[in-house]
Image (cartoon, rainbow, N blue to C red; front, top):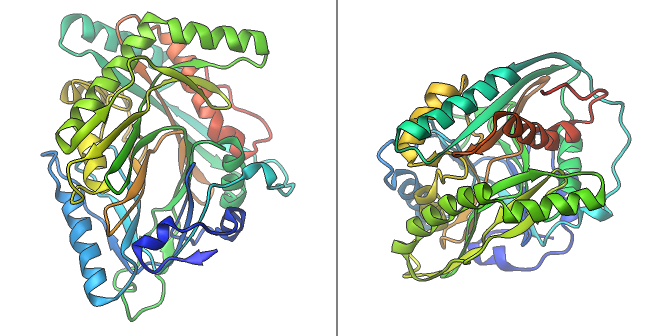
Length: 419
C-alpha cells in the first residue's frame, strides 16, 4: 500500500485494497472503489464549497485547476481533489484536498468476511412522495410529453428514516462493496469543517458528521491521459430470484422499444457533449446488458481520445452533468418538470462523486443507489426515467428495487413496505 504524494503515483499498483476498506472510519475524508482502483483519503488540507453555476460554464473545473496548481507550487497538501458535486448547479459542491491519500487496485470484496451485528431497527419512516402520489407524478410527466417538447424526465423518490441507533458506516460500506463488486462504491464526508481549523499549519478539522454513501453502477466519466470513457445506463428491469424468469426479463429489456428509446436519448446527449472535446469518439450502435444485484440495465460504453491534455476529468464531468440518465431531455424542460413534480431537494443524489488530480486524470461516478446519513438520520433516494409509454406502477416498482441496494446494506430487522 502506498501513500500518494504526486499525481503519477495514482497509476502505481498497490498491495491490498481490502486494507483500505478496513481502515475507513466515519472521520475519513473519502473512500472510492472502482473497477480500476481503490482510494482512501484522510484529513483536510483545503476544501471547495461552491456551485458550478447556473450558466453551465467551467466555474468549478477552473477553481479545481487553480487550486491544484497552487498546491503544486507551494508544496502544501496533495495535488488531488476528492468529493461530490450536487444535482443542482446552484448548490455548492463539497470537494476536498486531503492531507493523505492511499491507493490500491480494485477491491476484491468477495474475500472480505463481515462481522455479525444485531439488525438495525427503524424508529420513524416517511416517504416523499407517497407511493400513489409518485404514480400520479409519472402520469403527469407523460401528459407533459404529449403536449410539450419534453422527451424524457427522471422522477425520484426519497425515504426519510430515523433509526433507533446511529448508522454503522463502516459496516454499511463493507456490505455495499460486496453488493457492488463491478461498480463504484463510495463514502464522501460532507461534514462542514469548523471555520478556520484547516490549513497547512493546523490539524484535521472537527467534523459535524454527515456522509454520502452508496454503490453506483454508473460511470459518468473517467480520464487517463488522452483516453476517456463514459458508460451511461438507461432502461432498467427488476431482477427475479428465479434464474429462468431473470433471463427472460433481461432478454425482454434488450428488446424493449420503450427502454431502447430511453437509452438512445441518453447516449445521444452524452456523445454530443463529449464530441467537441475529442479528436475521436466511439459510440456503440447497440446497447448491451449490465446487471446489479437488483436490476438489469441497458448500457453503452463510449470511448474517446481528447484533443489535448488541458481538458481535465473535472471539466468533462461538469460538461456532461446532468445527463438525461438522471435529469431528462431537453435538460431545462426536464429540470422544470422535476421542480414541479418532485416534493424534495435531491441534494447530492444524482450528482457526481469521484476524484481529479493535477494532471487532469480522474474518475466520476453518478451518485445513485445512495443515502445521505447523519447519525441516526438517513435520506435514501431512487429515481426512474419517464418517457412516452411509461407506466406509473412499473416505475414505482423500479424505484423500490433501486432503494433495495441501500436498504439491504443497512441490515434492517424488517424491510419497509415501499409500494
